[in-house]
Structures are given as C-alpha cells and as structure tokens.
Image (tube, rainbow, N blue to C red; front, side, top):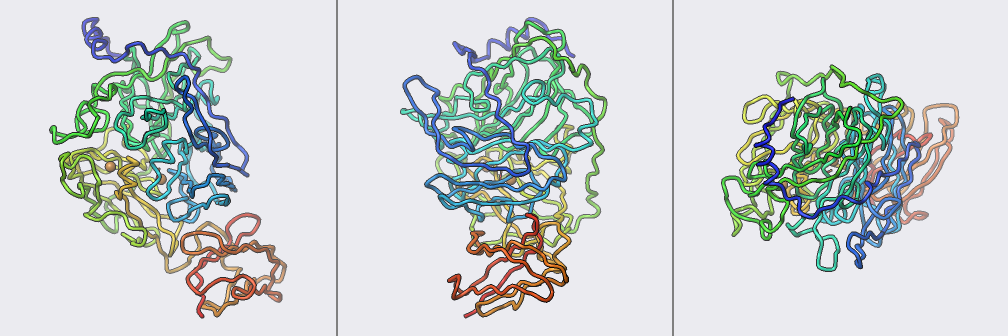
Length: 582
Ligand code: C2O
Ligand code: CU
Ligand code: CU
C-alpha cells in the first residue's frame, strides 16, 4: 500500500463535502429468498426520509426495493410476479442468460392486477445481478420509486474459494442509488439535483463490519450517476468480480468507477481495525469531466445540464456510508485469495461479424447536445422495429463509438461480453472479466465480443440500451432477435421433439399431441406478440389421445400471430409461433 504524506491527506479532506452529515441510520439489509418457487409482489409503499414528509415508493414484497434472490447455477426457478399496482409494469433479470420471453423486457408487460410467471433454468456462473422495471418510457420512474433488487447466483467454483459469504455479515449487499426529491419530498426523476445517496434504501447509513476480510457487492442502481468508490483512509481494496462474475484474480485498487447498471464485488481488509470507523467515499472530485458525477458532465466543457452545478455531490468527494469495525466472527476469512477462476474470452479471429453502433445527440440543442435525447445510429427506439437479427450461436464484435459530449453506460441483454479494446488499448483488469454494461466515454470507441447462445425466438427481441434510465426512456435503445432455422424453442428442453402442435397455420382450432405412448401432463399457454398470456389450459396427451383446443368459439381468440408455450413439470418443453387465419 502506498503511504500518502499528511500534506496530501489534508488537501484531500479540504475538497470533501462532509458538512454536517451524520451517518446515524443502520443500513437496511434486504431479506433473501432462496426457494426456487419465488413470489414477488410489486406493490405501492411509502418511505420516510424527511421528518413530516411521506415519500411514495414502489417495492417488491415491501415498501422500497426487493428481497435478494439467492439462486444456484442449475436451479430451475419458477417466479410469480404479481402486479398489484394500478399501472402496467415489467420485471427484467438484468445480467441473466434467459430466453427473451422470460427476460422481462418492454415487450413482456404485466397488466395491473395480473401475474407474470417466468420459468427458467439458471445458467449463469456465480455473480451479482439485479432485477428492475423495464417498462417502455417509464423505467426511470419505476426504478427511482424503488423497483429494483439484487440477485446472487452461486456455483460450486465460487463455493470452493476461500471467500466471505455470510450474507449481511461479511458479504454485504449494497444497492447504491442517488435520488432527487421534489419540494413535497417525492422522488424526482427528471431533476439533476440527485444529491441524496441511498444505500439499500437507507439514507445516511452506517453498518458494523467485522475486523476481517469483508466482501461488498456493489450495484450502482442509480438512474444517471456514476460513482467513484474508494475508502476514506485511501486503503487499497480488491475487486474480485465484475458484472458477469468472478475475475481471474483479485485486482488491487484504491478507486473503482461504477456507472449505472454495473456491479462489482470487492474485498476490503478490516483486520486490525476493530474499534475504528472508516467511510466508503465517492471520490467525485476525481471523476473525469464528461461523466455524470464529475464537476462538468460534458467532455471539454461543451454545454450544461440545468441545475447540475447546484448539486453538491457533483465533482466533490462525499462519504456514502460509515463502517464501524467490530470483533471478528468465528469463521473469519483473513486473507485475499491469490487467484479466482479461469476465464475463456472469445477469440476475435472467430467472429462472424462486426456491428458498429454510434451514439449521438438527437439534435445539438441549447445544452450543447448534453441533455438528450440521445440516439444509437441516428434512430430512436421503436417497439415495432427490429434493429438486428442475429443467427443463433453467432460470435459478434460490437464496436461502440460515442460521438456525444457525455459518457453512456451501454448494456446488452442475454449475454455477457468481453471487452476487446478501448480506443485500441486492452481493458484494465477491472474491465477484463465478463461484463454486461460498459461505460463509453465521449469520443471513445469500445469494442466487445460475445456469442449469442442457447435462446432463439422469432418474435420476442432482446434489448440493448444506455443504462442512464432517462436516456433509455427517451429512445437510446434498440432490439435484436436471435433466430435459428433448426428450432423455435427458447428454453433448454428435451421434449421439443416429443410434442406436436398442428395444424399451423390453423383456422381456429389446434391439436396438441405427443409422439409418446405414455400420457404427458402439459400446461399450455397461448400468448400474443406483446407477450400477454391470453389462454392457459392443462392437458394430458399421448400419441393416441391428442388434445383439441378450440380457439374461436370457446376462447374468443381473433386471427393473428401468437406464441404457444408448453410446460411440463413447470419447465419449458415446447414453444412455437402459431398463425391463426380467418
Ligand atoms: Cu438493467 Cu435492459 O436493463
Ligand atoms: Cu438487462
Ligand atoms: Cu446515455
């Protein structure tokens, strides 16, 4: 560790914005759900951050944010998302590798009072993901009100490492979000005065941590802001994971920049510090201009955002949470592992295509093109336009060029990627693991490589977008289909071959049948192209006893394009596009 002179420390503290902030609220630790049958109720709630004011919020199974979902790689999870709001919503499993119908993008809406029932097998390696609303044009609003939660995926490789993993004790989840409030102390989505930082929904938090190696799972769940995390004593810490899971080895650093949507797992060594307090600090004073959170959000001083300059946390160092160091636990981890996992980045020589995506302001405008809307390749998002159709298993290089004055965190659904280079240079260790969000600074070109495996679907697209949620809502988003000539099945299954659905196209009735002699108990769902389930039924079928489904008379379904999804033992078994004619 580098020893800084007292003189430098004094200068550093002079730049800090630490006036009168007392950290007196115990950090809320989200409850956990580890069952594979998960019920998430999206509900209106209230929180109280200012004496005499009630702030309206939205939570999952509570007032604000949601429980941490603990999943094991290989689990089959069955989730009921019950929307008790009077508004439509969606829930997206950010970072998870699932089929598009289960991914919870803007096409898979949940109407008020409706329940959405995604089912999928957990294919991800150990990682920290999150879930949040993805409602078209309302993501920023619903997330700001509290529609977010963490997902922790575990696997045997991670379990074999000597890492802290006692949830809430030495493995601490931290959803870090800056928030603005209106005069009546309601969440203000469009304001640039997001000067209140909540961690797990707690304002001015402190937490007791044991005097040993502690793991923090950091999520930047802010709508717009990047954080530059560091410890107030400037101690080194160790990054062990990025968005998609563990790095090859712990990487020692004293600052970690995380933009909206990004996650990192870090180890901090508190050994020998019992009785002391240190802070997790946002070194906003060191964020380069051109990133939301710096003194100037525009690169090279081009333009301003209204009221940005009056937000005291922009461009200054601010403490976020106080760590009070207490006695060691009985099974303390006291060392940092030398290495973590083997990663196998894709070889650019094997790529099938390079796609170029360029970010620009839609128009330059008064703010110097800083205030948005921003667009990708000149066109705003259109629900009805598929921007790319990608053959299943394609290996692709995406080259992202930012020709706007502000940095944008670019996110892609479904697959993690490896960054190949940033302006031609290899990524630093923090960015060399599996990623699903990358901050592309003004005038930068970032190239990443990924492969579109497992899930093909002719109708439901996956999304890519800026994770500054106001930018996303305003159209800095696109969508792609992954298609396969061989099969239309979205989820892994052995039964696609055994189930038959005919005739297709049909004139108002369908048969569901099996090639097997034994009876198969199936649950059958018909959904429209927006993903809304319009018919649900159960059937026992075999080769000699198909089930007839009468679409017109009994079910009042009108001609059009639909999807049939068939589940066996709650797991996806068959999926196909169905055309119903007059
Ligand atoms: Cu975190 Cu498309 O989302
Ligand atoms: Cu996502
Ligand atoms: Cu953006």
